[in-house]
Image 1 (cartoon, helix red, strand yellow):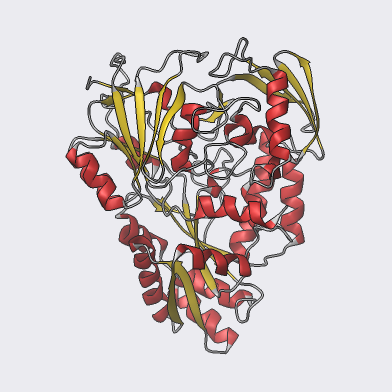
Image 2 (cartoon, rainbow, N blue to C red):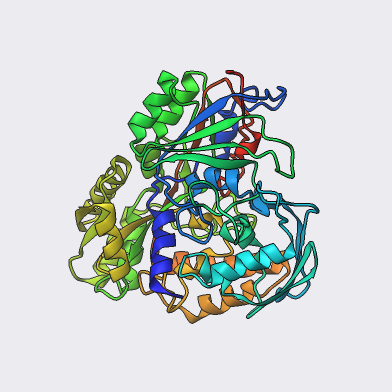
Length: 512
């Protein structure tokens, strides 16, 4: 695993401070059925303006810009994936019919028949192989999972047989992201992106400002209702929300709790999900954080419920470990209660003063969280300095392991089959230097286990060990998703999703 690809993919997921979260109760209760278009007939035609929190300059699935949750809406418009993340961690077929295995090493992928790229060229088994081969030859983040494929062959026009280098029961998860966003290896659009087979094609781009897509008349599925979608790059959350209120945007990516509440109060559609976890990672190679008593004392001194109220206004929920609340692996992992008395006892046993620097970015939510934690630790006698860094400096410190305790907010816990690299001995994404051979054995065995119940039990055992040893502190699952004007239909209820993967080919507008 190369350093640069890993760095890029994790920064993409980790720096979006609540990339997607809300308690299932809050998300379900606050989502308007009418606004979601559940009973209304889609309206054909019109343009939808969507404001996103990031800038995209390269849509190539072999690159690094379309793996972040808020960018999946753009990727899905042009490169509809073979599968999409569904409720409670399920995988829903889109351009594929199935992906099956009997031993987790040999896999068979079956495509839907008669697929084409937007220029009419066949998207067949050989096109999938060419796409994956091209990714394997890059240095992108997507090359890491692609490297697990030892060989692949086209059994017929719609069937590909994969042999993996090692068993992986979660191999199918890769095909809802870059590996499953099949791109042409022979043709590009007018702005240089490889052609896709999604419901839209790119027709214009304004660097740093917007990207325009129009309906793909060669799309194999139901034609998209909207004629045109314009994705606007609006990184400032307040300005983005104001543009929705003013009517210049029809839909936006929303990640600030008061924006979600305000949108609901003003009759807009909101659809959010528990898909991002706020955590902090200890540097276990730096004293005194190599001492279990110190880590457990800090763990016991932090009130997660208060953090949820302070940072997320109670719209999210607390995190109890590596298995997210909506995980399909239903394991009862008990996180230690908030217990200042226990924290003080552990610190007395340690017998030395404890002080630390808490590295975070300077966003309002991160600073609110850091300030609350600083106060909580101070109440048990721990002196905490807040090290507020810009995004680049935060990333440099993370990868250089130059921190005491560093905030790490990521959507990675939404996929419980792949998140274990954060705790795997020697992994490039094990930023704190945690090592536990038992955890390594449990997760490795689970990865090779085809039976879901057995894999769930193994993951549960690993999660309990991680929570007990506290190399990472788990705080909250925070709200984010999409807010839309009442005239927009086709936005699904994301409250039971682990990953927010919107399909713009289903959106429609009453404004013509």
